[in-house]
Length: 133
Image: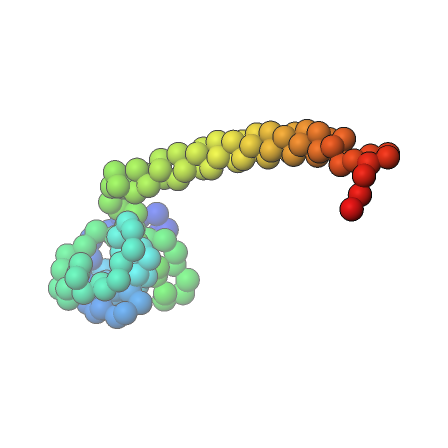
């Protein structure tokens, strides 16, 4: 089978480095799965997820000469946890907007009160003919 972008293939882990995993695709062809494409979410140590000779399903991302970029993550369903994080970001953004609206209202009320206070104290400062010590 020809290796083309978008194909999903079976392979075997042939090597592990700190930046990714090399996968043997057969027919003397090897591709690289970058650490960001190993799993959904952050991967600190690939060795906790994969070992040499593990069978893996990979998706071909690009083919440039003899370099084949692969992804394990794109062959897996996105876990709910990741979806919940994006929902929390939306809720956080909405609460930030609500907070901003409350702050604007508070600032407007505060400025009005300060203006009233200044106006009321101006008349009580003694004006004309006031006695000074």
